[in-house]
Length: 418
Image (cartoon, rainbow, N blue to C red):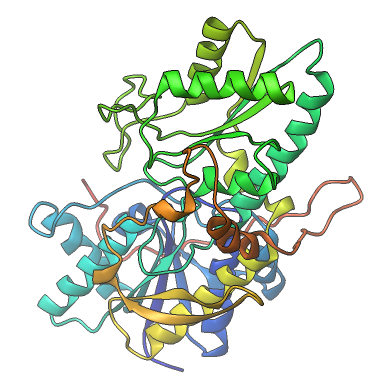
C-alpha cells in the first residue's frame, strides 16, 4: 500500500455527473490500495479539518455515485486569493495536509479550482512537502481552456436541447389563441456553450429555437424584437433561448439586477428571461411565457448524456493515476480525435494552461445573423449529448439515488478561526 492519503474535494456549482467522477476517484484509489479522504463542502472542509473517510462507504454506495446528481461530499463557492493575500489560509491547508499525511490533492472544479490546486502545488514546494496536486475538470459552462469539453456540460446540454424541443411543441400547439413567444434562460456567464446547445433542438431556421442570444454577441434590443416579430409572422410563434450572461453594447449585463456579487466575485445574474419576456410583451403586444430552469439544468441526472458520464468517470480515473505517478500541477483533459465517428482520449495538461483562463464560443459556431448556431457548432455539440444513461428506478417510480454515510475522521488540530 502506498504511503500517504489522497484528499478529494468538490468545488463550485455541481453537475449531474460530478459524483460519477468522485466514484471513479474512490474506486481507482481503492484498486491501488490508497486511502481516500473527502473534504466536507470543498475547500472549506479542508480548512476546517472536516474530512470524510470514504473507506467507511460500501462498494455498492460508491458505485451508485455514478447515477446520483448533486455533490456527495458537499461543495462551496470559496475562492482563495493569491498566496500573499491569503497566506494564512494556505498555511492552514498545509497544516491539515501534514496532520493527515495527505500526499495527493484532487480538486474537482472549474477555473478557480484549477488556480487553487496550482497555488497549493507551489506552496507545497516552498515548504518542501511531498504533495501532488491535480485539478479535475467540471463545469456545465464548458469554458475550461485546453480540454475539448468539460464533464457536466454534455448532460446539461442534453437537458437544454430536450427541454427546448419539448417546450416548442407545447408553444406551437397553443400559439393560435395563447402564447406566441416562449423565452428560456440558459446558464452561461461569459460563454454561450449551453445556450448554443439549445440549437440542437431544431435543424432549420424556422424550427425552435428560432432565436438564440449569446454572451459573445452584444445584445441589440431593436434587432432582437425585429427578429421575434419576423419569426412570429412567418412561423406563427417563436422560441427564444438566452444566455444569462448577455450584455448590451456598453458591456452591461442585461440581467444585472444590482444584487451584488457571489463568493467568486462574479456579478449575480438571473432574470434575463423575465426581462426579455417583458420587453416582447410591451413592445410587440404578444403573449409571452418564460422559464428559468436554474438548478434543474445542472442536476437533471435522469436525462444525462452517456458520453458525458463516460467523460466524467474517465477524468476521475486518470486523475488518480496522474497523482500516483507524481504528475504535479496537472489536469486530465479530454482530447477529441475524431468527430465522426466520435473518438476521444484523456491527456495531461499543465494547470498553468488552465487556471484563470476562459474558453468562449468560437465565432465560427455562431450564425452570421447572430441568432443561431452553425454546422460547425452542431458537429462539435452532437456527440456530447449522445447516448442515454438513466438511473435505476424504484417501485415508487422515482430514481434511486444514494446518500453516503460521510463518517468524519477525528480532528488533530485546533479549530480553524478564519
